[in-house]
Length: 187
Ligand SMILES: C=C(O[C@@H]1C=C(C(=O)O)C=C[C@H]1O)C(=O)O
Image (cartoon, rainbow, N blue to C red; front, side):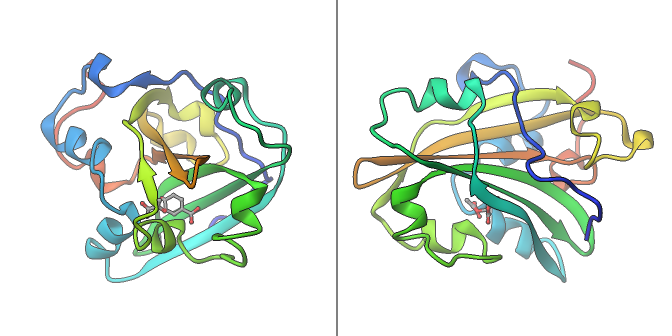
């Protein structure tokens, strides 16, 4: 687990639709555009999977989040941030923006269970196309050690449930298996 992390960590970055991004290798592309549960894929690649919830509370949204949710009739938004671990290594930082209707409804009491456990087992949740981000690990200093300096890739999508939308953003941290093949810095 990671200690001394303040909530929210935040992820105020630039997002671009995946079909407008040059991804350096097919292995990373497969991870970024995988439409299945990321939790399940990480569980299949580790002997021990863990989720550390950094926090979940009503928060102000980033501009990059408000812009994608602009037409929503939602009065209160919750931000949920977690880190997903495989065999004690931090692999993914996830930040989700969830309307109060879902926090008080389908996602009530989710706690430290993975969101995917509910989302991918209820066909009423539909997923949008992916947007991608490419950031420097220095933008997530609380999650990345200085010696792990590298380009990090992330993805986000919009899940819709009965006309209510939520955003799920995931950044692959330096030790994530998504970087095991190909040099993502050469781009
Ligand atoms: C959406 C999924 O849920 C995962 C778990 C999350 C959470 O519990 O906050 C957030 C994003 C995902 O990494 C998934 O498994 O694909």
